[in-house]
Image (cartoon, rainbow over all chains, first blue to last red):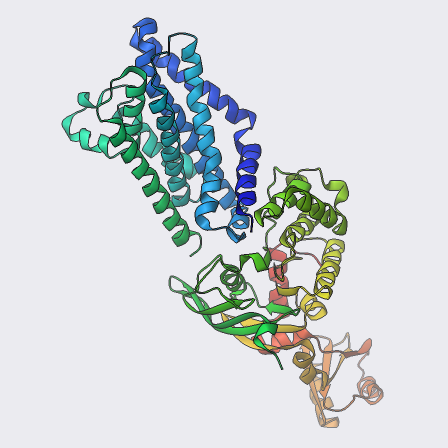
Length: 245
Length: 328
């Protein structure tokens, strides 16, 4: 069986059906623009603040784009039972879920570059370490997508997916060092910050854009990769337990 | 004699519970290759749970499943390439066109672009959907949705096809068309596992039938063998508009070789081991002032067998049809 045909067509179908729809494209454009504008105005430091707020805006764009879309689309397909078609196909479950999440991962990467493109018109990005930035963006997209998958498997209704997503997403805005340094957090919240995958992604982005990372790049990449594998494995286990029970 | 290679589906000691509810209890049966096997039972009898276990959408608590000789209990997804599944609800993608839905389903089975497009075109024509090929599935009528869902189920030419309530909720013409398609697939050699609560549909289509009730198989046999014991009995119904309850008793005394009952007001049912002669009965009734409107011989059907075996009346099945929005 040519598994790659199935894999590729699931990705293409999801792009056509969900990710390339006008509302999602506008979401991908408006959301980063709104966040950038908000923090730009709030900082009151003019153009020089762009570099410092860019990592946070990129991370948030990825996080909200991937978790929203994946959690909603998977829950929607589960609800209308079209997901059963995929489960009935002769494709290993691991490959099936990788195909199902690949669209969201690519959407996340696409979302990440919108604030970068906007920033490129305003500030010089010549100092950005792209060798760290690109793997960071990809790993944040993967981790966020798998978080969306974890959420999708845990709920039954589309509205539950959105509510449950926010339970994870909104604390991350404040706890992961996106806009406020982790060092500024109260002591009791610091361990929680290090238990969240976005902390390591944000640290990588800060390091790549303006050199202000806390942990070394290999450690950040390794921990983020462990989060990706862990979230995927837990989601697969939950799918087997809940959907093929 | 049936050999292992002739058996498409073999199930032994299958059991499944959901919490305290025992959905399926030690179910065992075999379906031969090329056979059209009916799986009948009222709602909640365990039909869909059994199909889900056979197709890998649910894990059995106990028992073994072999599909095409593959042990699906050990490798739940190993036989997926052999089977096609048409669920009880049309579950294709509403945003995709009929053609794109079929092409996508074909791609899930690894079919190349040229092959899947040719197969989709062939099936759209066979299922009379060519004109609607470019329209979104979400805009199809119920009958069209069912036809396309069946087409999607056979896109990869499966050896074994699971059809879960294929004609439920669609109009008479579409149901008839679907039955013809099921017959054609059967004639082409596809093994078909059909669940339905339309007993007459099963009688018309199936080679063998299993009755499931409260999660247990209560009877498996060919349609002919199931109906034969009842066919050996002669049954006649006599309609009398005026009250005939007392006459049933009198008839019993006059014709001791025949059994008389009154299943509903104004109706006398006669059962006998030998052919029933209508003349003496009508004369007897008319002599006693009863007006005989009609006397007709009843040919026992699978529905009678079902009622006899399961104790579930045809009215209950009809209610289930109505609940599901069915029309036949």
